[in-house]
Length: 132
Image (cartoon, rainbow, N blue to C red; front, top):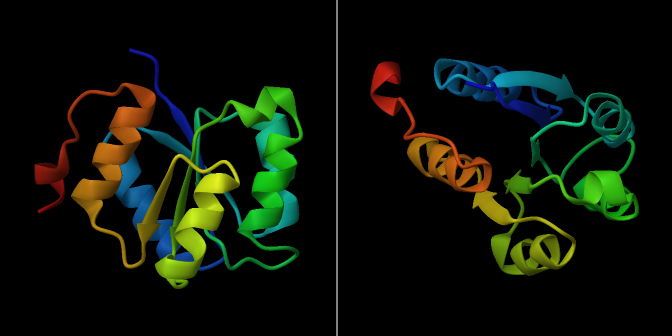
């Protein structure tokens, strides 16, 4: 079984830990970027299988990250899930037009997020029951 790598682009340390615990329990390998600039660098360096992207980031927001990913043919194919606390009425459409495959409102629902990740990566059913 090939373990999928997920880049977590999130400036909030508690949120990063929450993602890490959830994803590790479901057999994903995670690595982090706390801002837009390091997100682009990490994506170039490590070529993740999927990116979970917050919109509110230092050094440029999540839309800047998506523009940079879309401008690079090797990175444009990486599925992006935007997870944001920003108003979905304004940001969902913009995120999807910008290249995101899904938009999830914070605080995220673990089962919903895992289901979306599983759909995008063709992964088996999530082990969400292990977290209860």
